[in-house]
Image (cartoon, rainbow, N blue to C red; front, side, top):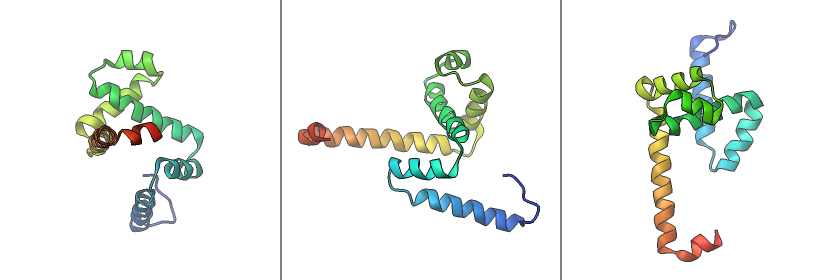
Length: 120
């Protein structure tokens, strides 16, 4: 985290916790989009979107150079994401598991209720 001269370490930690709390209060992709568009520059959003896109390719075992050709994301960024997947805090893996679970739930819900799949 970037250090501010006039802010203590505990104040920085509190600000970071408050940010995470704000993110957890969001209830939909649309709310997240609005929040992140207000919070971040377009370049910051693109950098995060690039990193997130790379996660799926890496988990499929696609070589770095091929991911670079497919996505345009630099090999350096791909390598950084791979390091985080292997030795990071587990955030990518957690969200991937939850996203896979959500996809399975949506599929099974629409299989049980065909009208939901037709009507949206």
